[in-house]
Image (cartoon, rainbow, N blue to C red; front, side):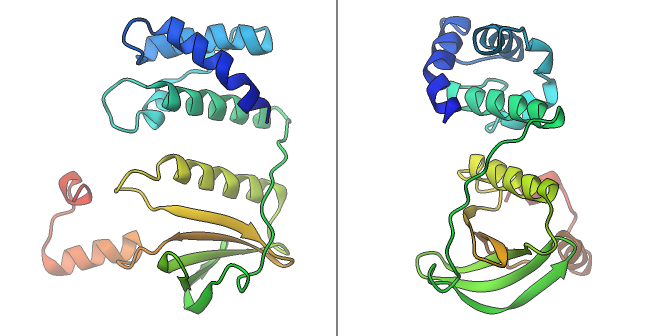
Length: 208
């Protein structure tokens, strides 16, 4: 809620920083972080703006961030910094059962340390992958990681190159992530299939 209240101030700072073209270079982002930090936290936080963070939110790879991208970058970097220094954010996850969501589980696709991946059918999406995390096994750190993963996937939901995450909810026993079904298998299976077919694994292949 506090981020929503600060969005207008951040947009004004961004507009002033990036005149006249309203798109931020890496240096613009450092200036934006510095000014926004002084406005919101009374401290210059330009040092938190890294090249890695910039590239992570440069979704189209043009070397510039529009305000929507810059806002998400600022929010994520600040949230990570606060969490690393002991602050925690309250996370609200809707509560409903698989049945209430209208989801039918077909079979288990894979299992591992992070839970189960299940082939399922969703009333609006159709075939999908439901990742189930048992509350008996998950801890606060794992939950934060799961939420962070979902938030990043939702930021990239318009990219055809990134798996879509549709929703997250919980029941009494588990947390559930409803994801796009990647029917081609995992990366290990993909490499094996390419080797058998004599196909070279190149950047161009992954962009198709």
